[in-house]
Length: 348
Image (cartoon, rainbow, N blue to C red):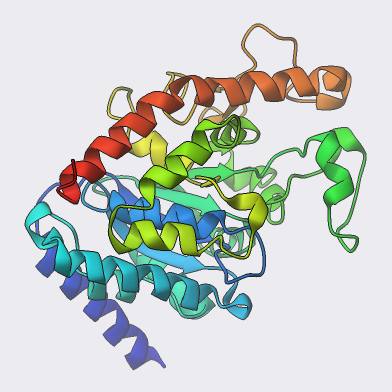
């Protein structure tokens, strides 16, 4: 087993050197995703397509499909197959995109491989590793609690790991544990508190996108963009195919993509989440206790971050404001994406 781990790491390292070399490929990213096939929200499949469209601007160092039991690995394979066809047809090698085989080697087949990949990536100290969590935090929490020293080298960005909106509670699966509305963890809340309350992670750099990400869903624009994206190669076709069994999701849903938007928007400083960006605008509620923790901005509204129950009557307004900080930048992001894809696919 130990020999296999060494060989696995050697292959990943060798491919990384051959394909990326010493060239600055932008922020290093590591993905934990609950991507799966027809067993939950399809937005992760769309988000992975979007990620690969930007893989020439980001240095992907690992993809962990948490839901292996729901064909999470297979879902990743299908996206990579579409990517491979575009890579060949549109000569993406000339545009700084990584080979499909390289991406395949970065997808963990099980938790053991996930832990190995993460330790390798998070142990590098040259630049921070952005850990993007597109689902619950159970696996990333398990690894960090086992290797807490790695937290100093990472920057965590999570989607919907905080509080759930009261109007969404009736749609929770019946077997999920429920609490008071003002304390009910969001859809992706599993594993969140283990990290949030652990004393060894008080200095962890963390953006918790609690409700901001919902700015991806509102209005008619996501439906319009969905149709526009469908014409861009095999990845565009796959964008449509992954929601064929979900009539309610026939739009550019990509609820996890704001974690990527934070990194690809070059018009703000990555060190300062309080600046507006394509991902929204965030606030540092506990500068003394948690100096590097950021979550949804409240604007000028009254909101008690330490005890939301004290201001829970404001939660709908807070959520709308947070959503709006992303939505106000959405058109700019859409336009940039379309321009990138038209150039990539040589379309008019």
